[in-house]
Length: 497
Image 1 (tube, one colour):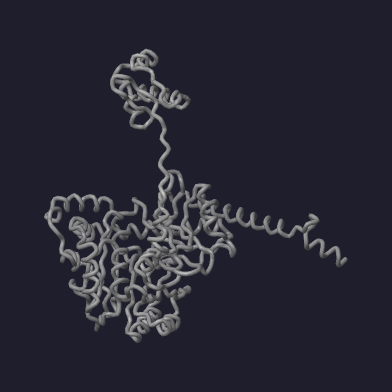
Image 2 (image 1 turned 90 degrees about the vertical axis):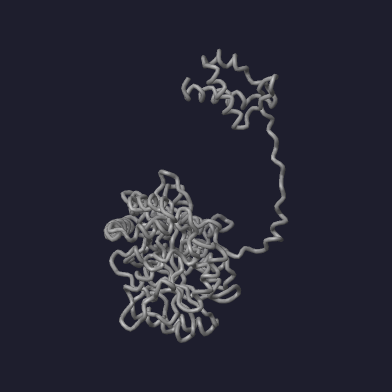
């Protein structure tokens, strides 16, 4: 008998059990064989399936019976409220960017490129080779594989101008993804209870990591060209902070890239205050219309702590990143990482190094740039044509995202829910602000799947905006109705006339 026959018996008995009282005896195997024309093996498979579902219970020598449903014991977890105290972070436990989406939904919320934009062939081949190497059965050094350390140092060294000492492999610490590196930096550089200057808006993971580490966040507004150096200077003076976290290149979520002049001005402010600039270069490999220019390449005095990840450009499965720092702070970060993670998997490090040293890596980056430009421009065009009520303040020259401003007064969280009911998944901009949002925003990832559905996404977003403001207008109109049923404004006009 086929699986379909087994399922037919299961479905029939489930319907019967639904109306049978607990403890009722299930028809015997012989009776089921006769009723469904099934073999003994097929009936046994069906009974095993029902037992696995918890619908029946067998009593040897007696028969099979409908299982009595036992109400789950109510457990009171209220004691944990006092034990845990208030949350360290106001952000959700799982970011909207990490949510799973229905297969048929239009997904513009994720923080990663879709599979077609990744070097899948290179990654699979590299993992196969790494699994056969010594890395599969040996422990990696705490600081990371020397060859991978040297590669990261050389990559940054290519941007170092004359007169500045390039970083060395010893300055590099391999970490398990940029998030792990950021948390170690925050703990090592700033410390619990102390202030950290941070751009607003900025990467939600940095906000979460800083808050979970007990830091006090000091937002510095980031305008069209990035933070104002005078605002950064003022924040340092007012707070006595020792570090500023920033994304000078293709910032997440805004896409802003600092000009060389602004970068130098902010670096000078950091130096004047004897502080650190934590430079998150998450999008180094994701350039489209402009080249990355790391500020860390301009500094050899230890003021810039640089972090670069391969997770977005190589594969989400290869969580490999590097922290580059000079001076005693490097050893503090190494100590923090060693106490938390001990070391990064040698297999992942070996595979990552394999990918980025293959001749096909540079070809992949060129192909990614072309494909990302096409997708970005298609989403920009779709929004401009079909979402007139939203404003795209800038077209980013790299990265993965568009930062879309919504009409004033928009309830962003509700808008996101309304879009989801229509089949569009987007990320609310509230998660990227370390304090109250300056305006209403959503973040849209143009490197996700199904770019052919971008026009549909833009139409859904516009419909949700229109519906929300229609509801707001109707509520306002209703609220102006007086007790007599006459609109208040009309009543006042009649009295005056």
